[in-house]
Amino acid sequence: MNRAAFYAALRRRDSGVFGTSLTQGQVRGMDAILDEAEARETSLRHLAYILATPYLETGGRMQPVRESLNYSVDALLTKFGRHRISEADARRYGRSGSRAANQQMIANLIYGGEWGRANLGNTTYGDGWRYRGGGLAQITGRANFTTFGMAADPAQSGDLIPAVRMMFDGMERGLFTGKRLSDFTDYRPMRQIINRMDRADDVAGYAEAFEAALRAAGYAAKVAPPTPSPLPSSPTGGGLAWVIGLIVDALKFVFASMKGR
Image 1 (cartoon, rainbow, N blue to C red):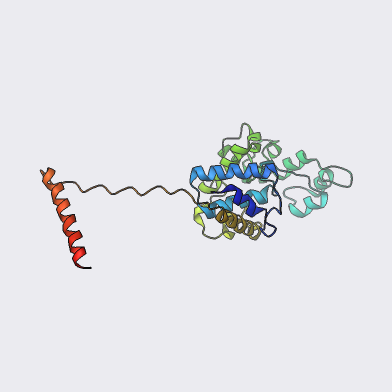
Image 2: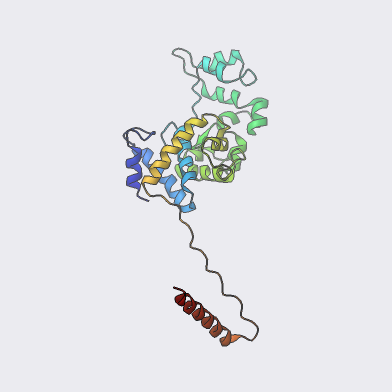
C-alpha cells in the first residue's frame, strides 16, 4: 500500500473527510490503524468502516480520547430522560453562563443508578466517571472496560495502541453490541456494531471517503497462497510404478491435447 497516496487522497478538497491538511496526530493515529489492519489482513471495506468510526467518535482527531461531559443545562434536559438525571440536578451541574459543567457529577448521574447498573454494569458509585467513554470507539461502562481487560486501569483506553486493538477486536468480534463487521455488506447498517443507528448515514459517508483513498493507495489485504492439494495416496504396494503411471497418464493427456489443436 502506498501510504503517501492514501494521505494525498484524503487531503483532496473533495475527499469528504478532513479538508486539505492533516495533523501529525491524525497521521499517527491512521498509521497505527493501517498497521493493525495489515497485520490482521483486514478487508478493504471493513478497514474503510473501521477508519470512519474514530473519524466520528473522536471528532476527526483519530486519537483516543476520554469522553467530554461538558453539557449545558439545556443539553442535559434535552438529551437525557429524567430517569437519568433530574431537572434539579441538570440545573445544578450543567454548564450555564460562566459556570463550568461539573463533569464528574454529570457522569455519575447519567451513567449511574439503576440505568447504569442494567445497561453498563456500573455497580459502584463513581463508576460513571471512572468508566466514562474512552478509546477510539468510545466504550463506556464497567462491563465494557472489563471485556477489554481495562477495568483496573481505564486510562489505558487513552493510549493509542491498546485503543486501536480494542477497536479492531470489538468491531471484528462483535464485542461492543454483539454485531460484527462480517454480519453486514453495506456501510449504513454497520453502525449497529457501535451505537445502534445513531448517525449511521454520516459514518457511511465517511467510510465511502476512506474506501476511495484506500483504493487510490492500492490497499489490498494479504491473501494466503492456496495450499497445493496433496497427491493422492498410492495404492498399496504401488511405489515407483505408481509414480511412473501418473507421469505416463499426464503425457498421454498432453499428446491428446496437441492432436486436438
